[in-house]
Image 1: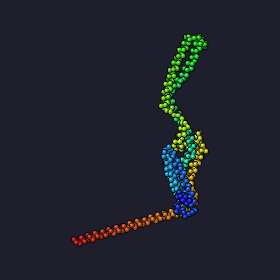
Image 2: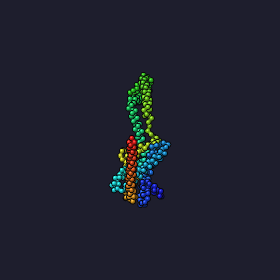
Image 3: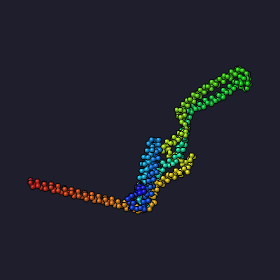
Image 4: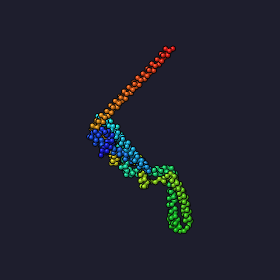
Length: 372
C-alpha cells in the first residue's frame, strides 16, 4: 500500500520528502496523482487505438499501436503532472485562476484529443453503417456521373440507336400485318386491303414483294443496329461504364473494415445529423457527453488543486522555495565575492611582479652607467 501511495504522490508531482511531514495532505495528493495516472492511461489507450487504425492491415499494426500508446500516454502524463505541480497556492484566488487559465485551456485541448479515438471505438457499429451508406451513395454518384458523361460523349450514336430501334419496331409490326394480309389474299378473304380472289394471283404476288422489301429493310436495320450496339458496348467498356457496379454487402463490409482514421472521424461527425440534414440531438448529446467527460476528467486535477484550501504542504513548499531562492542568491553572492577577491589577489600579485621587474631593470641600468 505504501508503494502505491508513493507512486501516486510521484504522479501528482509533489515533493515526497516534504509531503511525508504532513499526513493530513497525503490523501489529497493520492487523489490528484491517481487522477493524473488514469488520465494518462486513457490517453495511452486512445492514442494506441488511433495508431492501430493508421496502420490497419499492416503486420506490425499492433506493435506500432502499443509503442505509440505508451509514448502518447507518457507525454500526457508529464504534461498533466507539470500543469498540476506548477500551480502556486500562495497567491490570491484571482491570481490562482489567472495562473491556471492557460493550463485549463491546455487540459481542454488534451481532453478533446484523447476522447476522439475512444468515441470512434464506442460508436464503431454506427460508424460502420454510416460508412457503408456513404460508400454506396458515392458509388451511385460515380455511376451516374459516368453514365452522364457517356451519354453526352456518344449522344449522336445513342440517337442513331434509338432511331434504328424505333424503325425496327415499326418494320416488325408492318411485316406482321403484311403477312396477315398476304394470307387473307391467298385464301380469298375480302377486306379493304385484299381482292377476295382465292389463290396466288397478281395481288398476292404484289403483297409478297412488298413483304420481302420490308423484310430486307428489317435485316439491314437489324444489322446496323447490331453494329451500333456493338460499338457502343465497346465504348462502355472503354469508358468504364460496364466495369463500375454497385458494391455488394461483402464489399461494403470490407471497405468499412479498412476505412482509415479520417473516414471514421468524418462518419462519427455525420452521426449527429439526420438524413434531411437536421440535427440528431440524441446522438449529438451522446457523442458530446463522452467528449465533455474526458475534458472534465482532464481538467479535474487542476480543479482539485484550485478548489482545495491552502494546506501545510503548500506553505512548506513555498517556504522551501523561498529558502532555495535565498540560498541561490547567497550562493551567487559568494561566487561573486570569491571571484572579486581572487581577481584582486591576482591583480596584486601581478602588480608586485611588475614592480620587481621594473626595479631589477633599473638597478641593472644603473650598474652599467656606473661601470661606464
